[in-house]
Amino acid sequence: MREDSLRQSIEHAFSDVPRPAKKRVAYARGAWETPELVRDFGGRHWKDVPIEKVRDHAAHLSLFSPEALAYYLPAYLSAALIDPEVRGFLLSSLSIPDETQPDLRAFFLRMFGRLSPSQRSAIRMFLIHMRDTSTSPISKQSWSYALETYWAN
Image (cartoon, rainbow, N blue to C red; front, side, top):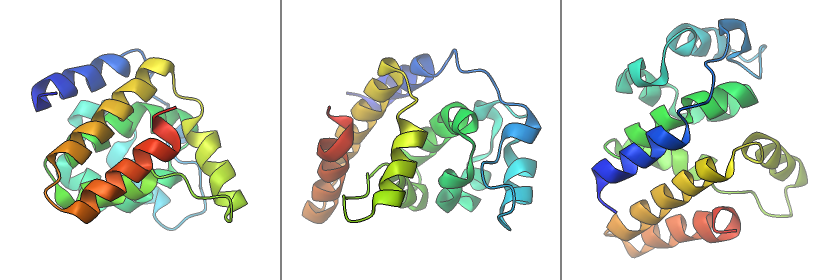
């Protein structure tokens, strides 16, 4: 799939997700990164979040509330298409923890299990694109792992 078609698919899949209220952006309200996360994302349309802010919070996807995750995930997916730093953190966030980490696995399922079939499909297309455009065998394997262990189902 071409990158512009993938972007359109992502945008379409998440187009009906309501923007969360600013006070509902963060899941982990006590985390030290939360005030910056709320400041940088709260009240903005996901398309208006600068890529620099997505990069600044690349490792903070798990701090979003479930509704904010569904709303701002397209900003991360779009940024990952062009930014290797965001891409690496997003790969980690989209990879389900194995059974030896039941608490992390349950958290992953709570966060991503709420996504609609079309949203899951857009993420699946994103993972396939990343796998297919990777030049490193290790990178291809990592994208395949994320895809096959959760998103391909």
